[in-house]
Length: 479
Image (cartoon, rainbow, N blue to C red):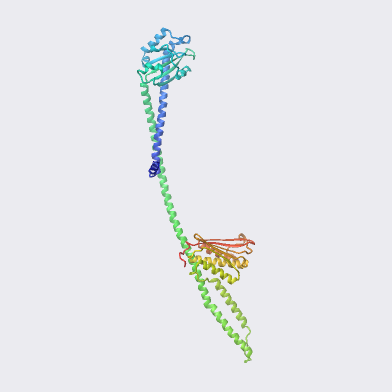
């Protein structure tokens, strides 16, 4: 049942839920307030009527019962005067019955002769009257002394009023009156209806004002919500544009890396086909000239022929130049990486470094993907190549280690050595001549959206850490 109610309420808007909920709460509140106000009105009217009647009756009764201060009964003359009061006056005719009590709870006078002289049990209202206060309430006539009244009336206004000795506060008797409540109840009902009308009107105005305020607040919230939705949509569109621009930047970076490698391969090929080939040919010809020069020295048939001794130095210079050009080409050029997997590329760069430097490198590869974008392959190759060169140049190749692992969408590369290390915060100035290689590694990694870091402690070695993204780098194929 509760689930159905909850499901039904969830189909309403918050304003509708508040409107219905507040209406129910205000209805219950109005009913409660009206009942309380009605009871207060009823109590006030009864009390006012009782005090007014008691004061009026006391002006007639008190002079005729003053003798009770010294006697337990009323004289026949005063008894007759009281009878005349309740039979011949208008107030007496409105009074259904009257009893005058002494402190022994005995009825010493009543307009119903059968009650005179009888003793009845005391009541709480009578005790209050003996203490000097007037009490009034609508009685259902259930007490023993109300037998005759019950035969005619279902209920009457019961009033207890203290009677004092003239000139003092001494209470000499308590007068009990019973008045017809028809007029009083009509008055109470009319007053209650007016109060309920006032309460209902007030609550209705409050409810309408509250609903109006909620509607205004709801419209304001909806307007702000619409504006926020538009801003969110605009931000989403802007983020999509930024993402597209980011993809284009990474694609451009990847294309630039591939272009640079193609340029380096073409430069290498041109050096190979041009200067290297010519230098090799020159060396071959110098070799022939050297042989002719040697023959010239042995035969010496022509005295005017000057045999040259500088050919060996020329040959040595050309050989040195050739070696340097070949070394430059080895550094510039990359092997063909398109068809190689990432583990094969890592193994090749490490073995090439070992062969070139004559040092040992520990290689650790952990679960690498078979398909890797070309830009990632190139960057990984260059990072490891440059880091190992630095380890060889600055640490003498001591403790060289390469660790590569695959984690989700990332390739983690770590190249470390056990060399002298350096203070990273003081010595690492990007752009200085001695750190151009490190700056180049950082630029390569960050251009692909990756992460690059150098860790080094003096006398504890250096560690190069790089993280490369496998996707969103401008390439989706393996090259």
